[in-house]
Image (cartoon, rainbow, N blue to C red; front, side, top):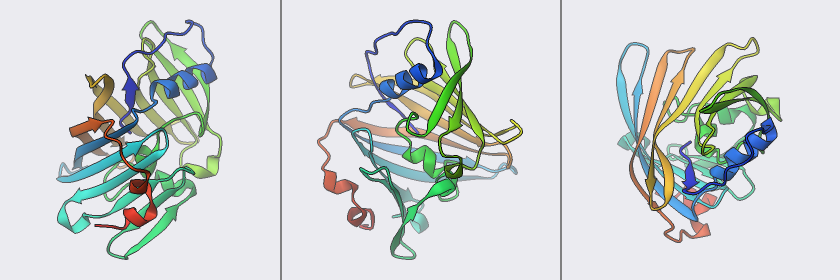
Length: 239
């Protein structure tokens, strides 16, 4: 998911292990006090047909996140909540109920997009993966990620591409048990806004189905003093 980054990040020693790199990525991804982002999402299927979605995202600290679909009207109100215990909850207005998302259900696509619930819920990597340095050059480091809980993911491993200079990640590729790529997440168009570097574009490709979703930030604001009450299951079910 889009990552909020402090503008100044201390540079560490050049020789680092996988866990050290992953810790650096997480430190770089420490969010602002809070943030509000509106994403315009364009979906393209394997026949070239397109559809549009609008997502609104609120985040507070490292863990609290609320995602709500606002367009098209038939899907408006569908919501996703990550609470302080890192539990993920999904609200479907058509059923007027909230359910908890567990295990590899988090890897499922969010309401017809190629963006998974895990993409929307992720704030850090270290709690979910162990890492080893796969390769590196002057500009980037590629980390091999192995899930700490394989049952929580529908892929066997992943490869994370990180910019050496600032520890901002730009690519995440999920692999099956044979090492073949299943899906790819790319972050690009980083811009500094109010002292934070923010990836204004996320491209998610389902390599098995030949589909792509492109999310573009159309509005964002930081440090507005969002209340904890916003990030509750009660508020999740409100229109």
